[in-house]
Length: 341
Image (cartoon, rainbow, N blue to C red):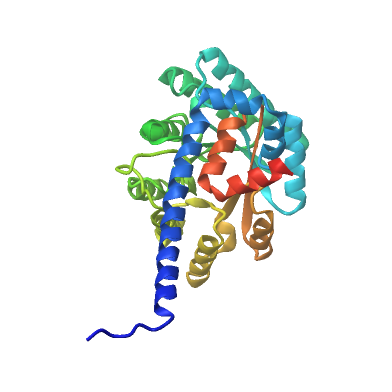
């Protein structure tokens, strides 16, 4: 004998199926969109179109301080006036000649000189491939040695950014040789990416070394066998690693952790852990990107935590901008809405 269905059963079933389909579409379309944006970040034809199209720069400039050192210093002064420190990045990567690497090196040294003369509160971040990582070990090491010598002269610090996983080991080896063998010690720091499976082991070693580390999520296209494919897994690993970096052992060994994220839930979880463990607010910092969630930057600062803003500048802004869109595809809708306005 058949049972009568409730009159709302069919509409509820349709709504439920639609909701599941929408959720799956969003989840997988976001992954597809992120893959597309990362592909475009390396596509020379797309680079050419974007850089020849003035409206693209008008929107990208929300995330990029300008094209000159003077633009970067002005942006840093504004950031400092709001109670935040900064790290400056002269945009560029994957140079093809030693001459191009030397040109980038001299521009970064000039940046350090301007930081010193202006008195702004800022450090410097550099991309290894911009300084010749793909050219030869001798070129990249010489350029980084010269940069760190300048950092000592101008009393600032240099952080080596991490690029895709193909150069992770080489970058870590460079960092350690500059820190230990060349004697630059606290002048040099490193970036580690939470989306790589290997990072937990890397963090444990860096804790033993008392390293100066920025933990970020990661902004490159990586195969699933090397990196977490789902954002939720990367977020969970980020929090796990942050707690390791705030452990008693890490503090005893002199590690100064920097947590690069705009995720308010992650930030709150890290702050809650620090409160529970009675960790000094001055023993770590949060880092966020220029032009991204400025209200959150101020909220965190007003709670007594250190906040540093990553300020990129330069004419080779396209790859950086595309990776920022890929990190959070919702930024693409912001870009498009501003473009049509």
